[in-house]
Length: 354
Image (cartoon, rainbow, N blue to C red; front, side):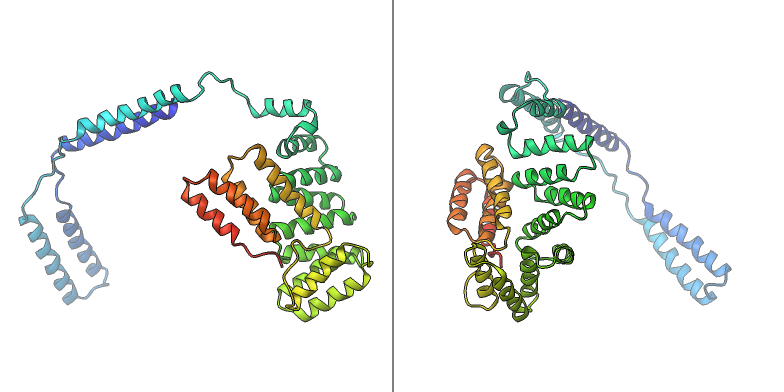
């Protein structure tokens, strides 16, 4: 309602000013004023010695010629046209009225307010098993305000943010947890993996720095060794990266599933095969974030950006079947929104993580 009133007021102001301008006679031609000012400026420059006498006379004559031409030019007074003014005024009145009518018919003007503080209080009082990941994250953010020096609280917050698909918030929470507990290598490991996931599976400079620090604090850490080797492969040092991956493989017990992940990464580095569907000793943490996003979309499917992220995540993880299923569902839901369909197609073409 306030927006409608402001729209009407702004339109009325424009119409009033336009009416006043139409009622006034045309203002004098500014060209004559301009050329008179130019004549005085030429004389001022000559008096200051910045222009020679010959140049002054030439410029003075040209400005005087233009002044005479402007003075002799016919004056065409401008007058606003009155045609269509009634229609504009009717539209100005009709649009807010129509908007208000549609809201009263289709909206919920009697629905009570539910401020964020009230919803947060309800979530805090509820059983956590009944809440979604985003609601749990909101509760944890509120709890952390009373316990700002608890790294474990930030770790749980990072898990909830990741499950809800808010990866940047998960990274921020893990950074804070590492600041509070710099000696906890598990937090550094989780931070590095979250940074890799945020970068679409690439081991970029910030993640590489985290894993290098982790390796200094905990020599031989499998996750750090794996991702640092991956960083070398991505940087074009394939032979060196493959050698480090083979050294890591020699330290992995024969009965551990991680051997298949490392072997797939070696094959990828040497150009002998495709990448694994998901790589890394802690791939389940990354998958957990994607599963959380999928679960959230099942509960609240009207989220085009979420569907685009889900399709891109499945594509990056190499899970073609799940990518195609999510893409088909999203296509059907947003069949009348070409822009969303284009984003979905681009997400489906994302390259698998290397």
